[in-house]
Image (cartoon, rainbow, N blue to C red):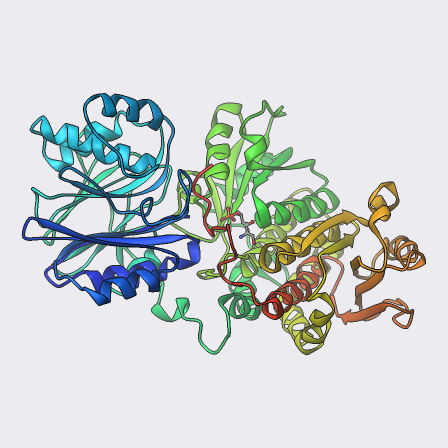
Length: 609
Ligand code: M6R
């Protein structure tokens, strides 16, 4: 999604803005631009494509100035081209915007009647014109922004400059992230802390509907009614190293290999050999969770797949009913909420528009409480939840989630164990599950050693157009996640099915051109899965089976490959078996030469509906 960086400083800000945009590239975008205000004039540069293309255009004709705003655009209204790229300029106003203004068409018509002409198809230019109208009434930039945002329906994070107010940038947010960076004699705005880590680690997180005015000397926050508001300054723990790619070819590869550490961090000081610590959900957590009679888990994409795995765990071990739903569906239907149901939102970013909206919607539906499983401590989802359990994956830059998923599984495993113990799971069983979870970092480390074999396996997929993933039980969501990874970064059409569903339809697709990838750890369903695989073999399908090292799967049959994965236990197997599927998707994408970290059309943080 779009990214924003802005600065009010004494030094020239264009290089800082460009560095900030580079740190936001992971969010996904298709054009970039920046504008600098100096001596009452605004200079602007914009380009379709990557930040480096905009940077090259800037370097060909650089301009100085200490006040500026910059943007990476992920197209919503209008195609990705230079005219639609931000910043947009109307009258005295220059603006960058992340989000969607729902009433922009009506506003545009009104503004055209007032004589405004528009040079882009964007909703953003309409906002700029509206601010300009309000400036014409004699309002200051801050007052004009306040007056404007009160007229808007939809979601926005914006940074705005006026030609008439040197040294000042006004920001505002509703439903899209924006934070303030506090430097020494300089202030910044950014879509996240990563964008600003090059200049400061001190940040102010804005609340919904906040408006902020930054100058070199100060950052002042206002509520929507124009009253000054105090907001805390946080010191970010993020280090510049955490967002470096290091020795790896892509962020995704780095993040896959960070999983043993990320999972160990997520479990640290939360579980030991005797059990899960009681206080990990906060002071009220234990008491609230003891009352829970059921859970509704809501999330999108990879986070939704993590929720599906958790359903198996929580129903098996805690015997509580769990429903799992994608947020974009949940938010628009009238879900039935039985008494004492816990609403659980899972989100890596904590800013996904649908998940956030679903969580807000849940407030009116009478849940016992809300729990956020999230990777970004100051995100909206975390701030609005009653209980939180942070995953500690560190920044995930690759659009394809990897360590976010396995750390979500780790957090959800802690939740399942906590609920199970509260509901009287037998001690020996409970301790076995805890011991398995403690082994997870090492089991993932072992699975990563399969990389050389997977590099060879990836060759088989380079020229494929389709793939079918199969799993049973908690490995069906793992198959879903494997197929999502393959399709999003290699652009190979992939689907996942519970293996038992094969002969109810998808078997018709199986022939010598359809590779079938099966997730086959040991467990009560292994024999059933083997029968499903025979059905594939009998139709000439090419099989790739990820099997537990102790499983007896015939790897010698024609047109088949078996890779041995040591699951480390039935409970943790879904997290372990995910790893080779991530590696497979990654190496297929590398061989196909796609943009692995920023696959086409996708954004990392989906902050619009
Ligand atoms: O930040 P979130 O976890 O809320 O994001 C939800 C999805 O957009 C995300 O999981 C997406 O499906 C993955 N990045 C795909 O790999």
